[in-house]
Length: 78
Image (cartoon, rainbow, N blue to C red):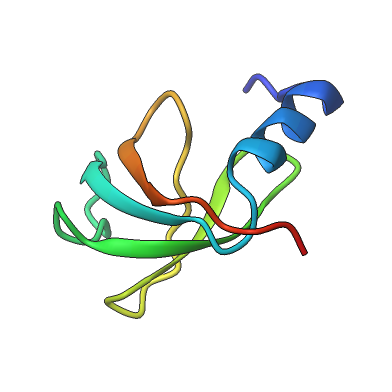
């Protein structure tokens, strides 16, 4: 498994700050929320995955470059 560099993690955290609202377009995972589900980014882990709290109650992470999603509203820096 390839892990992103510190610089790549920092860039992801800047692009997807806490509070960013996202819409799921496609995720190849049997536990994935339905397409169109909205969620809120609660952080970016050290592996570069977006930690998301989905409106369904799920907390399944998004993997940029693998999962398909779009930013609906950018969050603010805390």
